[in-house]
Image 1: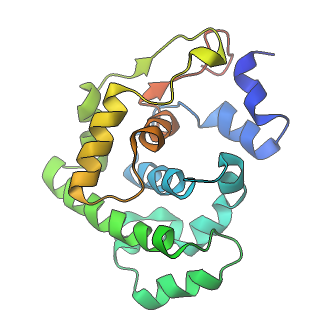
Image 2: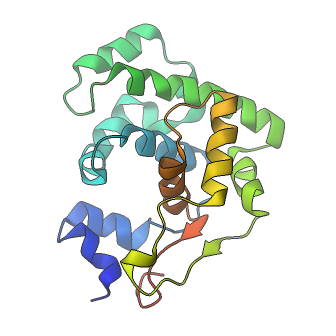
Length: 183
């Protein structure tokens, strides 16, 4: 087994994510928005925790449909504070609506969230062809630029490290190891 797969240590949810989603190119605005929200929610927590709550997040936040999340009321968001299926952090819960509203503005400016995201790499995937997990960075110049631009636009929970993980989650960055069968 490639060392690329060792990070999920037999967890079936993380295995499925690694094998079929992580570092796979997606051009779907709603999926990209979902990953932006989930990565932001992971601040201070493990990715395993977030992925095990993913179904509850999808239910709580309208399957991360951007327009539906942008229109959520304060009452809907406050209801999530008692939802045991998600992380009950008011800032993170309210950030879903705020981020959706900003993403709608980005779509108006760029035509799609996807076009905005891929503009940071001129439409090209970044592939490190790493041989060991120790080589994989946690931040890059692109994640720094994207995080700064997103913050300037008003998106919450997007530091350079979270943004780098986000880039992996939507396939702009492919950090599967060179010997990984799931590249």
